Image 1 (cartoon, rainbow, N blue to C red):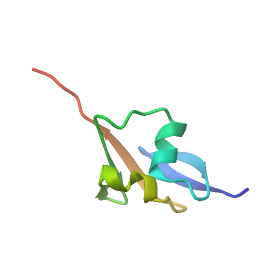
Image 2: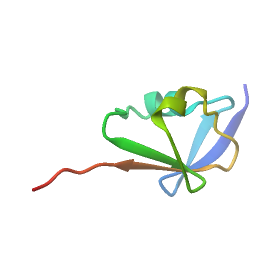
Image 3: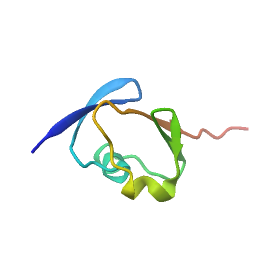
Length: 69
């Protein structure tokens, strides 16, 4: 089994090869309801999470919406 490093919210994180964004969210236990994901400074639509596979050294930012009033 092969592994690769990604930068997840500015911290090094190790994932398996062929990890999709859906797999990553499951691994770190994040709900997709109020988030956006940016990979290498490009926003990835939620409809693409399942088919978007990470590559070594990708820079991933998970942005969580915060409500207020």
